[in-house]
Amino acid sequence: MSDVASYSPRTAAWARRRRSFSDGISRLRKDRVAMIGLVVLVGFVIMALIAPWMSPRGGLSAVDSINNPTWHPPSRDFPLGTDHLGRSVAAQFVWGSRVSLLVGFAATVLTITIGSLVGISAGFFGGWTDAVLMRLTDWFLVIPFLPLAIVLAAVLDRSIWNIILVIGVTSWPSTARLIRAQVLTVKTRLYVDRARALGASRPHIVARHILPNVAPLILASVTLAVPIAILTETTLAFLGLADPTQNSWGKTLEEAFGAGAIGRNAWWYHFPAGLGIVAVVLAFTLFGRGLEEILDPRLREEGARR
Image (tube, rainbow, N blue to C red):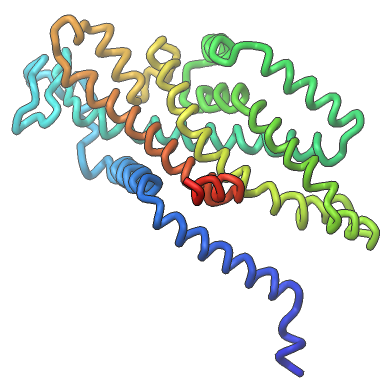
């Protein structure tokens, strides 16, 4: 009798979630491409976290590097060479990963938060709420994304937090559209109608039925939004709109271009930052694709047929 009493609907739900989570982890481990992307991402995150121990921050200062040779190719003392001011390119690469990943993750959190709130509110409440929010979304979609980001970055003070704000405010419309479409599908299902008939409040329905069913889509959107945020930060930094006090991969590329590294054939100046951007973006794309295939049954069935 006690076993029957302890096996409540909530216990059954948590048991299903644990099985689904274990099954997803097992499928992810079998996806070699996604695992390669995950390993690359973990490597870059670890490098960003231990940057102070890998390379002293003094290597970023031109004053502290005055005795270093300029335009020095990779050597034992300088594994990635030096720039036109004698600064270590390795130090710029390591510390640049911190800023680029911070902007990527923080801007994605803001993007997904705004997109999720707008998408869920528009899809669930409908009526004038849906009309107003979707017209606002259409306005952001009509205006070209990059020029809008450039204008906002030029108007605001050049700081890393303003760059995060600019990217987050201009990147959410597509996420809102996707989530709204999913909410419109979920809210017409029978278990949602049953919850309404039993007197469940709107916040209860959203928290217990709508949000759990759109969570996989939100998670997949996160892995695809981070690369866009990193590329946007790189673009803004290359145009000279980033925080001048912070070293990012985009700022390294901008300084290398301005100092004439390409004309001098100083490949060690711009190549590491460019390779880091490509590697992180590709890793997020590979991992995001694998995660999306696990969370979406239709993509999983197509993969099984292939």
